[in-house]
Image (cartoon, rainbow, N blue to C red; front, side, top):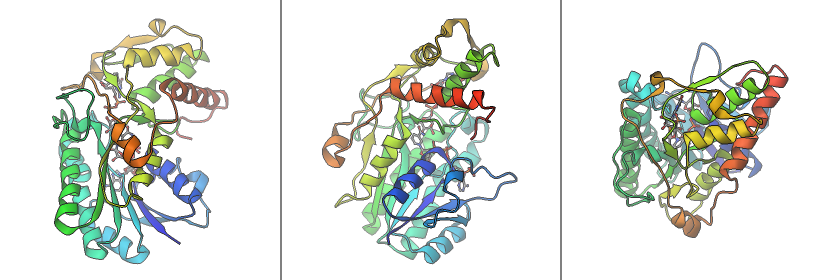
Amino acid sequence: MDKAFITGITGQDGSYLADLLLAEGLEVHGLIRRKASASNWRINHLAGHERMHLVNGDLLDVSSLTRSLQEIRPKYVFNLAAQSFVPFSWEAPEATSSVTAIGVLNMLEAVRMVDKDIRFYQASSSEMFGKVRETPQQLTTPFYPRSPYGVSKVFGHWMTINYRESYDMFACSGILFNHESERRGLEFVTRKVTWAAANIKRGKMDSVSLGNLDAKRDWGYAPDYVDAMWRMLNQDEPQDYVIATGEQSSVQELCQAAFEAVDLNYEDHVKLDPRFLRPAEVNTLLGDISEAGKGLDWKPQTSFAQMITKMVEADLHRVDNNISWET
Ligand code: NAP
Ligand code: GDD
């Protein structure tokens, strides 16, 4: 039975990837770091699954990574762990760089030392394009990161390519544009807005405070995107891809869609608060998915409108049943 090792399994993407790989018949091992309070809500439904295992360690501790790989001997490693919230990367740039940049190097070194035949996936990001040099963005578009997070992702991206070219490793990097879901963290703008729309509809909140409503993103649905990761590690040759929808919406259009889903007008409930503006903004992101179509036979299955409707419905269900946002 093929085995996969996932870092970041408690995160949005790690949890959907675990669902997918278990459905594909793999044995799944997820790296868990020690926390005062467990944050396993996205994978609680997998507890007790006979092919699902959790292993203690940390991306910052290379000995825990090599030990895990030696014990598990996986065929696939998906490196999804990161400090992934862009605003926090200005508040803690060194910690962000440690996990999001050096953590990638740690994982690559562990793979190189234990088994160079492991197929390795790195979670790269459209934040690397930052102040975009061309539109739409493709694999050859120059990077111009605009945050410590974006700079760290550029390091991880190039380190992955460097290990592929230096050591002949099957190492791939997926440049994924923003992707969201019912399991998205509350600090990200889509979930912040769908959670607010549900609570305002039920009279539990009056308003939501946001920053830049003009920013545009190419927003897709996370379950569609983990399928692209899996396809990337099953190619004949390692190759990087841009994964996106090829369509963009503004934060204002996001608000409109989420509040319309509960028959409300966003203009009555959205407030502007400069605390949510960033020291440097990424104004626009739009991905070119032609290569992913050709090389991976992949295309997004869920539209932006469908995704926002699903997220609002899930949040209404939580509010109506007094369930916490992280359930
Ligand atoms: P997420 O929900 O924030 O999950 C991040 C994961 O990383 C969590 O499981 C977290 O564990 C883990 N982690 C953080 N520091 C760690 C450490 N030192 N050791 C081990 N694990 C650690 O992120 P996501 O949205 O699923 O994204 C997955 C990956 O894709 C990230 O690398 C992100 O930067 C990248 N990405 C995301 C998007 C997007 O739109 N979602 C787009 C492009 C790229 P805890 O639960 O313990 O905190
Ligand atoms: N979070 C947040 N909160 N964002 C806001 C708010 C707010 O109150 N108001 C406006 N925005 C704008 C941000 O300024 C940004 O332009 C946009 O909404 C999206 O913000 P986020 O949802 O926080 O995502 P992100 O684009 O910064 O980063 C996400 O996508 C990247 C891929 O491009 C994260 O998932 C990163 O980890 C990922 O790499």
